[in-house]
Structures are given as structure tokens and as C-alpha cells.
Length: 396
Image (cartoon, rainbow, N blue to C red):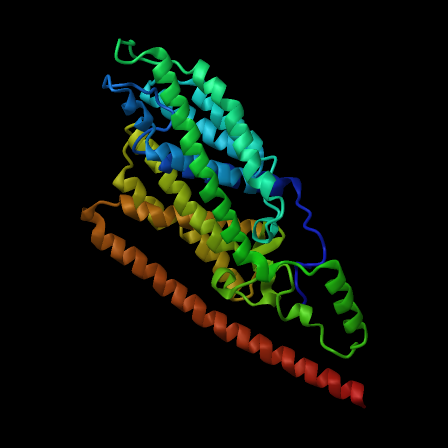
């Protein structure tokens, strides 16, 4: 069976696919930013509770710098607007819910840093080979220096200055705080991309010279079976752990492009994971930010009803009644993820019902899997018989 994705053809996204990818990048940024700043809000007003100016150097919590590191990393992988709006919208939402005053200078720094980082998108290979080292590290140092005067002159303090701490001293400590911590962030940021590079190197596409030699070699071996349909090609990461399918069923997968390498992921499983994460994210916002509760009865109904759709979609495909599409796999996988996370909101009084529901769905899956094996075995036997007859007729 020929492959659906040709690694030698550039990836062309439809408008719908582009929008979906943008939304996923936005969601990933929003979730990571929210959970990295959940306990101590990153951009809240800073207040000094001591007259010791050294206290100021520690007022930015570790959560703040972790969240900054995360969004700087994502800015080189994702679209600039998705990362920018993901982080910015969550921060504004948090500040609005908590009724806390906003520091425009700090929010401005997040926007400023993301824009600069997005000028250096990850392309793959440059970190591991040491290319453009000055641009990767020096560029960060330069834009940090350029923003320090804005931190120094623009930050608004919420305390009254005394003889023990003057405004100049406070601003100096605040600026040093930013300068020192941001310099330390450059190191883990570069190391993260170096590790990513090191992992991806074996899967990089061939150079132009190597590709030409390989093409010539194939030209002299026309009788050789086209192994392009049998094993992943250079530039592809196709692992059964992430795809659950053989290469001739790559239409069951979606492609995530990281630098030069195409990552193949199981469509339904990827959507299911995003369904779980999205439900965790939205439920956390509802519970911790808006003080809303999730009804145990509603969760029970969702756990009963939602899995019907993915089981139907997969079951019909399993017994070869209809072929699932990428869109149906994405939707039903996402729905299944929501149902899985809803189990966490069922109360203990429904524990017996929960066990019955889960057991029932597993029995249905086992039955469908049995019929899947039987139907596909018969299909393979029929195809093999037809191929045998065709070869004999040609031989005569």
C-alpha cells in the first residue's frame, strides 16, 4: 500500500490546518504559562515588606523566571503571534480575576522578549554544530541590555521610600535583579536547543550531495523494491511508540515539523492527550480563578456519553465499514480526552458506576478488536488469492 505522506514533497497546509496548528500552539503556550505561574503570579505588583534593600533582589519568584524561560523557548518553535497572545491573554485573565494592578513595564518586557526571540526561529542543526553562536547568545544579551533602562525608569513601586532605602537604590537593585537572572536564563535556553539538536541529528534530511548520490544509486537498481514505502526516509521520525501504525498506514498520523525533521504522531492519541490537557487547563481556570465547581453528575453523564463517538468512529473503521478521516480522528480523540479527564470529577458515591462504565467500554473494545482481526485476516487472504491468480494468468 503506497504511503500518504511523501517526504520528498514540501508540506503544504490548508487554511483550516494552519488555523488548527495556530490554536494548538496558542493553547500549549497558555497552559504552560498558566501552570508555571499558578502558585505565585509572575507579573503581579511587587511590594517591599522590609527596609532592607537586599530583599528587592529576591522579590521575583522562581515561577516568574521559569515562565519567562518557557515562553522564550516556545517563541523559537511556534508562531510569534500564538506565543505572544497565549502568554499575554492568560496573564491579563489572571490579573483581572485577582483584581491586581498590572505593571505595564513587566508585561511590556514579555512582549518585547518574545518578539526578539521570534527573530531566531529554530531551524535544526545550528546549535549542535555551533553555527551562529554569537547570534544565539549575543543577541539575547543585547536585547536584555536595551530593556534595562525601561526597567530602571519605568517601574512603579508600591511603597514609600525611607532614609534606609532610596528610590535610586531600589531601582538599581530591581535592574540588577533582571539583568542577573536573564543572563542565567540564556544558558538553559541554549542548552535546551542543543539537546533538541543532538536528539534530532540522526533524523536530519540528507544534504544535496548525499541525496544526489542516493538518487543515482537508485537509478542503477531499478529492480530494487522501492524501500521508500517500507522504512522512514531521512528527515522523518517515525516510531511505533508515537504512531502505533506501520509506515504504510501513515494516513493515520499527523506531521509535526520541528526544525528540519518531520515527527509523525498518531492522530487520535495526540488529539486525546490534548483533550485531557485542555480539560485540566479549563477546569483549573474554572475552579481556582472563577471559584466554579464541576458537577459530579455532569461529569458522570459526559463519561457515559462522550466515549460513544470515538468508539463508533474507530469501530466502523476496524471492521472496514468506513474509513475514518483525519478530521474525525482529531474530533473523536479530543472528545475521548475530555471524557477521560471527567473521571476525576466523579464523586466517590459513583465509584461503582464508574467501574461498570469503564469495564463496559473495555469489553466493547475487546469485542471490536476481535472482529477487527477476523475481518482483516479475511481481507488479506482474499487479496493474496487475487494476487496469486493474477500472477498465474500473466505467466500463461
